[in-house]
Image 1 (cartoon, rainbow, N blue to C red):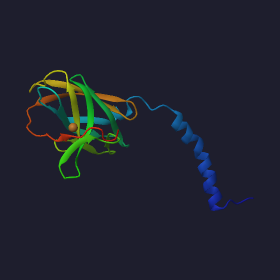
Image 2: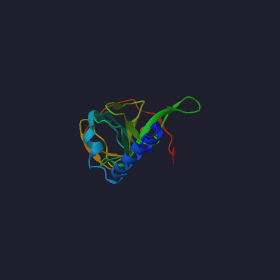
Image 3: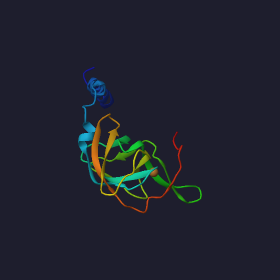
Image 4: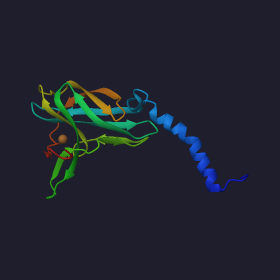
Length: 168
Ligand SMILES: [Cu+2]
């Protein structure tokens, strides 16, 4: 057959690209890829004596692909969770772990703020004193991570009730 139908030509083209796609999938992601694309600004943590607190800031994605924060940690807290704030069945605002983590669109930003998505500090090992700083590590879906330091500030809000167990 000298002339391929348009459909056959598309199939030939698709199979010609297939090996490249497979090679791309089997190559490990470059280390630090998501972490290199993300910048953190205006970061702060609410002062607290014990128990729980929350961290906020703006996560900006300078890359061409969406990135997702899947975990976080801090030496100040036994556990750090990625929380969202949503209305419960009665309309009261509650916070809970966010399914799938924090996704930051390509070229976009995600603002962590009181009453919205935030980093939940749990099991504080020591009081978070106003004016001090604490380190936070964000881990991305590709395994890369970024560390930033956040100032501790007085803040009276962010008192949403915690509804644990969501998404478990
Ligand atoms: Cu929370």
